[in-house]
Image 1 (cartoon, rainbow, N blue to C red):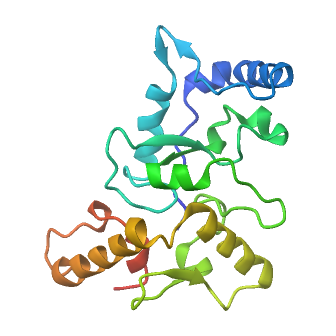
Image 2 (cartoon, rainbow, N blue to C red):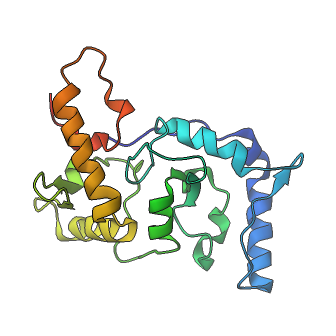
Image 3 (cartoon, rainbow, N blue to C red):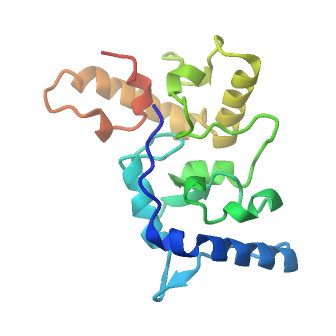
Length: 205
């Protein structure tokens, strides 16, 4: 199921439009200008935004659902790329910011496709099982063949863009999670939110 966003923080309500305008003007002057989070009271605002974003997904990556994220690996992703002229105005939009792991951030970078838009994990009607299937033999995920051609294309683009079938980074992790689930899910204190890749078990009673 899609995660629910908390209310937009006041820091963005008060400043997002101005900061986005500043970013747009900077990129128009210097097309290759580097991105830097603005500071308030001497601290970069991403340090304030990051825990708010993380709480929405119980500190799981918004894209791959892994929760084994070290402090040096967690980051904020601009779903619609901040380097894309069409999305300069969304640089500080609360709905465009996601808590992600280093693996997904490095794989996604600034990729975007208007033809097959990346699946947003909090878009209306989203669920893992609607768009994807999990292969318990290969530990890969594939587009759900029951969906329409455009939906399958979106799912495939999402898999490729986020590197969700990387053997070392994700497939092995899904295999470990599945084994843990089989061993411990019957325990009274088992909490699925404590484990990565929770979506694999969304249909299991």
